[in-house]
Image (spheres, rainbow, N blue to C red):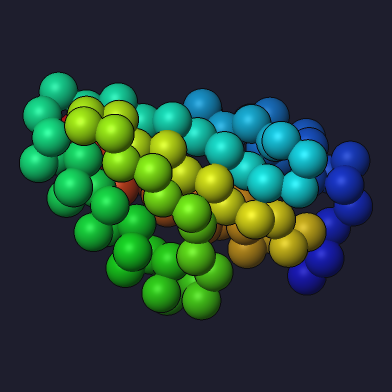
Length: 91
């Protein structure tokens, strides 16, 4: 279900760590170990396949940055929430 840009900004503001850069949702995740970041990326891949909506992923040693293009759908917010949950499980 489409939402307005104002609603999207409001929802993103409630998501821990996410910010909106033009039409892309961005979050940086930090890990204590390289392999934990890789396990997180595997989880993000599975979530992204389920949503059929895939982020750009940058891995820089213990840092993972996700850039999720916005479709102005509530699914973007649900997907970001699931990714945050995966982070909590993999840190």
